[in-house]
Length: 86
Image 1 (cartoon, helix red, strand yellow):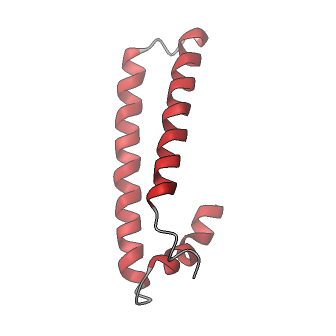
Image 2 (cartoon, rainbow, N blue to C red; image 1 turned 30 degrees about the horizontal axis):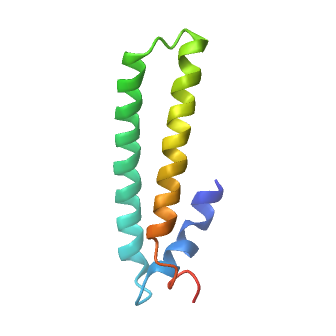
Image 3 (cartoon, rainbow, N blue to C red; image 1 turned 30 degrees about the vertical axis):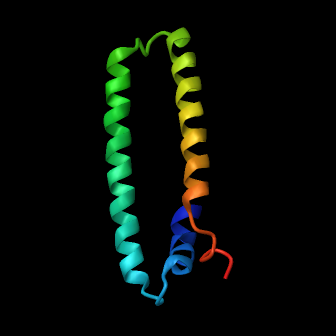
């Protein structure tokens, strides 16, 4: 809920000419693509591991948590903070 409520104000900061519609459209497309990719990867992982065994889920959770933390770090380094600090 918090992400939905603040998305427009965050996207305004990325718009160079205050063209929020362009940024919002790209944001929704990116969100949809990333969610579909995540669901596909999740379905593939559940076919590879025995999800009824708690001991198989722990290493998978830890590995995916490390991947998520790394990709979040890389994303934060890529975003140009010129538009976030103005």
